[in-house]
Picture 1: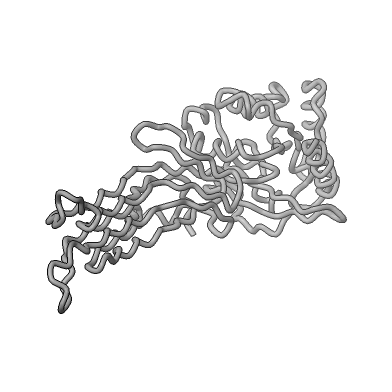
Picture 2 (picture 1 turned 30 degrees about the vertical axis):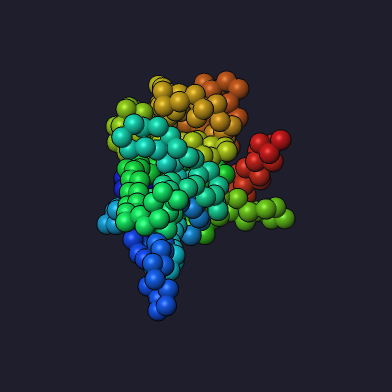
Amino acid sequence: MKFIDEAIITVQSGDGGKGCVSFRRERFIPRGGPDGGDGGNGGEIALISTFRKRTLFDFRFKNHFKAPNGQNGHGKKRTGKRGKDLLIEIPAGTVISDADTGETLVDFDKPDKIFPVVKGGRGGRGNARFKTSKNRSPRFAQPGQSGQAYRLKLELKLIADVGIIGLPNAGKSTLIRAISSARPKTGSYPFTTLTPNLGVVQADRDNPFVVADIPGLIEGAHQGAGLGIQFLRHIERTRILVHLIDASEIDPETPLKAYETVNRELSMYGESLADKPRIVVLNKLDLPDSDQKSSLFLGAAKGVKSIGISAITGEGVENLISNLVELLEKSDG
């Protein structure tokens, strides 16, 4: 399934049915009087969040939703049938805003959350409603009210406990394969990962947690460079971050360059990202000179706690998982 994390849809509630103009016609009952029933209300539309959907792909081809109209009223004071309500499922983690004004309407930050979007048009009153002592035979009824229509912008932000960030080719996809059941595509070239991947990590004797592999960031990502701002939003939902660095690519002259580049992009996007708890992980320790380059990084990064691993061989991975569990427990308060 193609990963789609933005969509614009139009929702329109049903129109109310027309009131009925009718008079009682029965044998032996002359001038039975008005008996036109009311029109039924139009159907309403609401959104509900669910984990059954992971992307907004369904809205790429179907982006207009119309609830049924209410039926017209009938004689014998029978009210028209109400239009059926429409409930639209969207992925949990989706933010809904007005597409025209940009105003945020609701943040579906958890599943099974319901948000009524548009109310149905009210059904018109039949002529039986307008009978008075001065007008015993009203020959008019109300039309039904029109339904409401809105253009909505849907913006998906993944819900995960841990977000793996880093420059392209740092080994994020390999790491998520090593610690979870997720099987993203991997390759020995930058930008292998074009969409975020989710995996569930089952730690021994601890509750499982969800980890997200965020596509590689580059300098200028907060302004849209590379895959940039398109995926930075997915980090907002995470509780902690794993900042993955390719130890084999650390430059002896500027050992903190990769580390500072990603940190700067997080800060420029929003302070909420820069302030998230994180673990710095030096990856690819199985490659030549990686240990020596890691030492240069640690010497330059005063006070930065880091863990050395090799995602491809599994070295240090269990230690990383234990540290993630500990940090998640602390974040629970």
